[in-house]
Image (cartoon, rainbow, N blue to C red; front, side, top):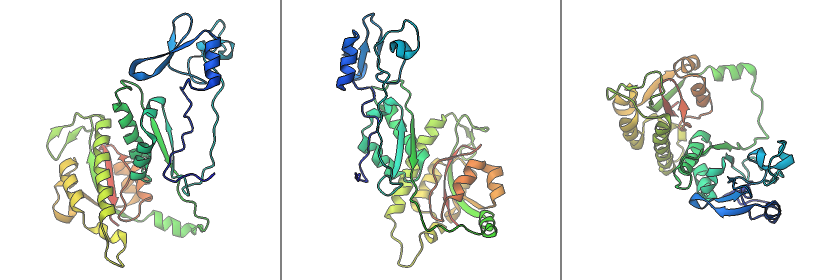
Length: 311
């Protein structure tokens, strides 16, 4: 069955739900009951007064009787997992896969779909934004909100393996980058050299600041109309007004103090220099960018970055 490319297919819609007839019968037959808990979440209780908010295959084995493998445990929670599947089209009709902890299910799937679309091919930013929104939901309180977004890259059946010599030459090429970095208190040097003040924010706060900045830069990039015949990468030679503004406002790197077209500019960097200065994760992210493209969030000893490949 073909799926709407903008519609999320929920593979765990029944988890934690007592609306399934088989679950209801199993619960009642074993002396259990259901009642609304804090925030409207359905809770289950057994004849001895113990409660749980988990149903079906996940949860404390002590609620599963002999199926849980613990002698003398109560037979109340089912051990039959819900199994569903859908055919994956690998970026044809499905752009991504999202795995979440139960509290994230409070975020409407259409909102999650929009976030995944906004941060296209930027899994760290998309995952962080969805988890952050879920954590702010009043019913979640101190619940652990975890999200993993996996993007599907379109399959190219015409890919031809490059000769080893050509591939090695390409991997050894220098790149020119501009960036915004936000430091946090868990870095090796939690100090802002631009404003000359110590940094006390958490890594999560730093990521939230950069996700907002990245979203604004992506929206700006989509609104720019290039002259006929001009390649997208050519427009990256000069920083945009939005980047210049955000770099001055947020970046905690001395490059933010450069003037004009050099603001945020890291200059030309060799692959080994990228690794030594910023780490392997940063270097790997650069390899997948074309000139003009913005990166996902990337971590180094300095802090958390977003960067654009200039050339």
